[in-house]
Length: 552
Length: 35
Image (tube, rainbow over all chains, first blue to last red; front, side, top):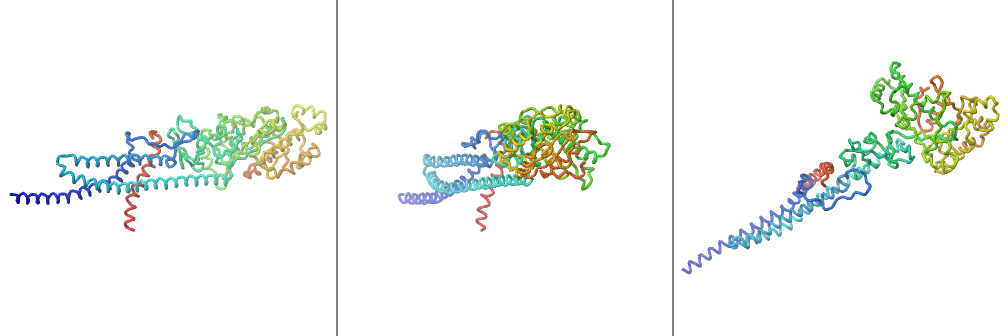
């Protein structure tokens, strides 16, 4: 019997050892495989939840991207912070998944030793523990590798996106520079590096100060209301409502698409600055209208004055696009066209009836002595467009340095227009016959001598840093309709007859070019005095605008 | 990140990052093995 028991024990021991030899490695291999693959899989489950399905019960991220106070009301571009937040979030979720996986394994190992049949489950626990340890080590390395790949994907994408943004900004700036587009606010006179824009979304009036590619988007940005906005003029941001980023003034003229020409008028009070400005705008509009008639044919004629909605900028008139298309359709090959439009509501409100003020009997209102807002006129030819900013400040601004300094648009100009009333020159006035004096007394400017306004403005323009040696000056003597035309050589007339030799010499000496005009800002028989077109051509030509030759 | 506008805005980029990471994790070992 003892032998039988001994044999039985040996057989059972051998079987158990065989069980041990199989159970421990199998449990170890199983645990190793489960944890070696389970850890990186847990990472991807976390990534799937954070990046793809985002279930409502998902925990909130610990780190949130910081947005500086006062930043634009737009959502951050994904690769400017949120991508790293997601990476951090995914790692935390993955860590939680791995931990719960590990805890389940540890519980299984512990419970394998606490059962009655420990003799059978114990070896599985031992093998499982060994496999778990090895599998966890390998799985952790694999999960770390996955995290590294994820971070690399985020990093490379972020670098690519930021580089693309920088390149686009450089290209856009280069295009603006090549096109010689430098924007100016018509109200605060500050240079506008880039217009601010209002969100085009319905019922959303959020303003974005700087829409260019950056932390809020590369090609487009998304307003906090969800509306997408274009980020560059290259992509058509000019279609949105623009604002000055400095003072918030509406820039209805859609800056950024055409070079801007700043044209300041200066001179003593009552010299005729406003009238001259009106006459120049009226002449430009007349050319535009004539060109339109020429291209559309006589049956399409409708004068600008007859338009019932004259208060609105020309670009907003109903049917204008239709008319433009029609115009383009009938334009003959190689034929040049010319369009002058009042580019914003403020300009349209003031200048819609410019031609009515210019009849010989009418006088323009006195310009109030407040900082002027530019009148903006858009000039378009077949190939180019320009925005003309015409600044008409009251003569009182040119009597004291302090007031002249307020006109900060002077340092944005390359061409200046000085307007002088010859009747305001005492020596000239004294030589007029009593009858002439009696007749002209009503229109004579009572302002101080014209030299004062010139000297004052000249000094302040120079003090503002304008290189006068690169600037052009048009010296315009008004009232050519009331006093005899001095002939071709206006400068000699000004020196000999008006006694303005010092002014003439100073202008020639300091400016790159000074040209003298004698103009009559009056409209007779529906046509402008011939002196005004000559002045316009000279001024625009000095700013790189060559008007079509067939404009008369 | 419960802002619906942000959730909508980031959806495509998140999926792109997930796809790129998954593809890289699968393809890199294969490439390494082949090379």
